[in-house]
Amino acid sequence: MLAVPPELSAELQFKTAVEWAQRELVAAGMVAEVSLHHTKTGKNPHVHILCTMRKLDGDHFASKKVREWNDVAMLVKQRESWAAAVNAALEQAGRDERVDHRSLKDRGIDREPEPKIGVAATAMKRKGLLEDPRRFQKVRGVKMLNEVRSMLGAMRKHGEIPQRGVGHSWWEKSITFMSRVREQVAGAGKAIKNAWEKLVDSRQEKGQENGPQR
Image: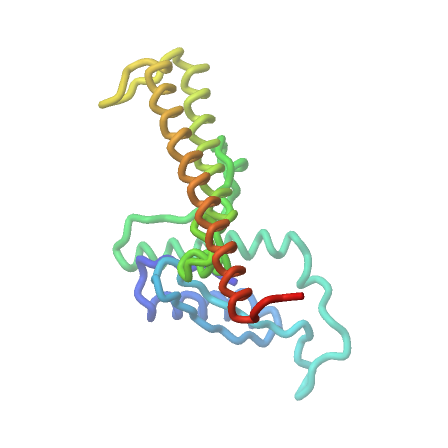
């Protein structure tokens, strides 16, 4: 699976993925099927590539799989080459955005990676099954943790955290930060209460439909 920049047109997204697959996969002996997927929201365009695990031997597949294709070193190389392909496409399109295949740790960024919410949690929230699914809570928690990290880092380095509009010292910002924490906790409590009430109501309706139980 490859993430493609939403800043590129669908044609350029697909062209970039196909050319990359030809260089990295087909040239190594794989047969690859490339599919471009666009979500309804348009926020997560991506490419799926299905690959064979055996090389072609004449008109047939080889009897043995190519184990080298599962090497971690090959995966690292492919991640780097895909980032280079995406950046070349962005430059060709006249865009200033760039991607980096390296982890936050390797880039020297002190931040926790944000987990993906996922289609299941998004669907539950959209359909009203859960007002505040656990995946949404986890993402907010990581964002809050990253805020704390940056604040503590600035305190260690400068002793104070300059900030426009709220305050100029670390303790003034901490007051604002804690007020947001209280708001989020209150919001989570309301979501839990609403979810519980929905569950109770659905049980009562089911009981009425089935009649008195012995």
